[in-house]
Length: 230
Image 1: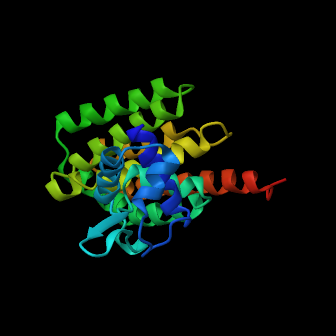
Image 2: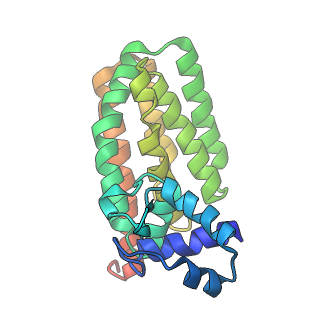
């Protein structure tokens, strides 16, 4: 019940049914969902942690401005997809990744250790094994690869930037899973080969090509869904 309440209220906020600035009528919502006030407040705490809600004395519980939402929260991203905002979500994430990952690949090529090489090769094998599996398996193995690549930079701040990569991969892999798209393994393998060879320029170029292929796949799938492609 707690989870379904979070789901229902979160989706309503993201799709605009409950608008920014609007004060929630907790009694009315509780009656509609047949919830106790205690259960409803627990769900509200979750949505407050996601940046969707806030509470003030004399004002009550209200929806925060969209600019204050936790844009990288997995539920917020999923709710945006549900209301048809997938293209904007993926565009924003792709732009952030383009600013991060080619430079990370170059640094990894300069600084990688033998342990990093082994981890990258193992992650690549995981991606190969996930071919033909579920969207969740594809996303998880893809994420492991990029986490390893970021760690191979030897920069602790880059290593933390998987916070931008994870939602991008989850959204992308779920979107394209049941469609005919390019096999992601060869593009990731080219990154590994450049990192192993200690070729920073080639590693950056391979990472950029990987991202461009990802954008192309998503654009084609979204076009298919809209009936734009023959």
